[in-house]
Length: 481
Ligand code: SAM
Image 1: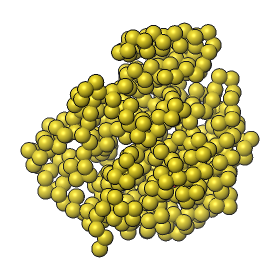
Image 2: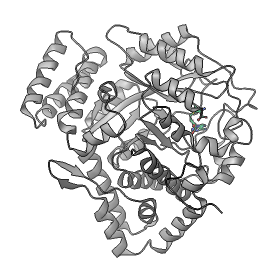
Image 3: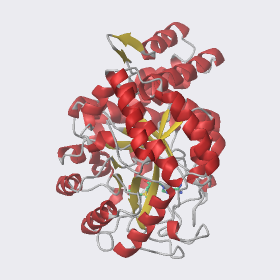
Image 4: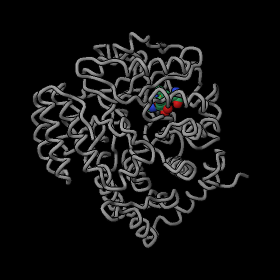
């Protein structure tokens, strides 16, 4: 039997099955232990330290107790602390991005994914470099600056060379005032050497969902193909970091396994990265299974109701306060609206999950990865965010200034967000409004920016941000702190 060891590089030791089962048992036993729950909540609350703020974060065991707790007042407190942490470390900024599907060729047999090799009725497509250019122009014309590229695993059709060439193409396209300034990458687990090549290509975050941390289920859910190898998949983030990728993004596909198991596994994975590499995950995504071609989500019996889904988000926020959290258009406007309050810091907008989807007028279904619940335009999402008091941000400055990995965390911990991320968000929002927004969105946006500029504590930064915005009105672009 493997022994739990967060510092080990072996999957079965850092995602230790027995430790997860013990954690779930401990959480069940303590779910009414008010003294312990209060102690955990106190630890999670942000505290003033010098000029900045600090947050203890929680261990997987502590966070699992909160997740199990069913005392209504305590659950309300969890949500309030989640909101407090979100505002303390991220402010009211919400970073915007869009996925770009390059190819749905895939040799794996993942039973929840329509790209699985046995699916003969889905249209298989792979974008040429010219088609990528057209897709990127369409995305730039909406106002997007940050993409997450997606591809199935197929060493013949989508080798790493194809991914690298596509990244180069994406970064090279300057159309009107548009540019993609950060390309995040969501492709299958690969070798240290390949991660090194991705790092050299200037990618932002490397994203890989674990799908499920439960090994036995994982093996059944991935019956064939290279993804069947649980250890290789689970140890991918260590190889990515060894290859020089500073920012990695975790996630599980909720609905495949018991959420309590996934929750503990996800946090153990974050603890492992922190213990070994000195920096936790840059982001955590929270996808839930959706209907798709050849996929009926009802056959997976671990689906979670919205209320529990939102509680999971809040508990993740308490456990890893410095990790960004992403919610996609898999979720509806209503769920996304509530989740934003609980700690989400990044959302996608106007997503198409089909290969070549952005250049087609109608939403195409033939190569879609899953049904999109939130089908609004980017302009509508931006306006909606601002009406709720959030600042939609198109900022990519940290990555471009080399503030990745622990350097970004330091900025967070030193309370410099209001002097750095806040003005950057306002400037990129201004840029978006100038170049892409409807009149109605512009009106709300300019008022919001004027109000939010006053919140910048450092007078010099405030004056400079205002000067930059004036320059943008005269046509200049791309200012950042
Ligand atoms: N091929 C890559 C890999 O092996 O990790 C990742 C790319 S895949 C396009 C991105 C993610 O979509 C997967 O990791 C999975 O979690 C998610 N996904 C697959 N099928 C889904 C479904 N039916 N509903 C929601 N999300 C799904």
